[in-house]
Image (cartoon, rainbow, N blue to C red; front, side, top):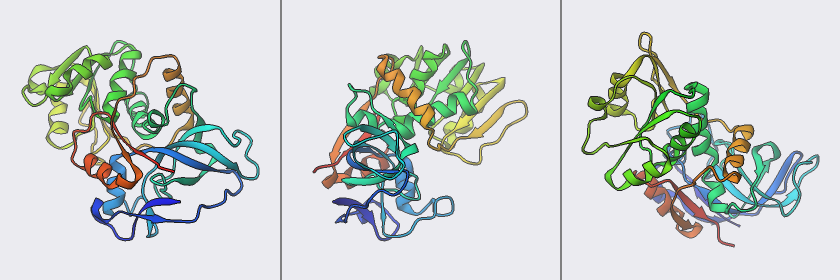
Length: 307
């Protein structure tokens, strides 16, 4: 099988496609034929070596965590899946392995895909949708009737957060670039702010929850729009802390199969739009990494395994 691997840390140009022998599933594991994987900012941090203290890895390392595919073989003790099942899940960052044609995955890391969901749509979900869910309802404790500001609403996490917040009964304000204003509104935002031409900090006050996926100056100015007991939840700045009566928290996603199952149910109920940007073949997976590294992807960037 082919797999996109690194032998040293650095930029996407160091990732190389290599032939590997597929592994056999052990107890509690299944082997998958990977059909699609999605690129997350974490993949670039793993590639650069920035996450070694949190997620120590051995080189060479196969990149990627989020995947969707078909069960080839169930290992001893596996009860939930059988060959032929279409599944979606997330590999632990220390293991990696999604940017490949096959993988061995723990049973508990997988969920069955809805019949009408494509592999590309499924692969887009685990980290981005899971992070949005955790940020809003875990760290953010979002309630119906609250005002929420979602930054980068057309991005991977943001596009899901707008939908989840709207469905939960919140009043949703979103920031996006001019080309994505329409998309943010289509996803459910009540108000959309062009961050390139408008200053959200000068327009808003009394926001109960800010979801920051940008960091830097955007995060700093977000404190200005908060209600006295509002909260900022950041997915990029691990140093964010409360300020007085205002809460501040960093969210780092850990796979939650139960949350993913709930997200899949939303899709089955026709309540979830999955925004896909570009689909790259595995042979051109470096271009997918470079696209995400450049920022401004609209929704999720996908790597399609070729068999």
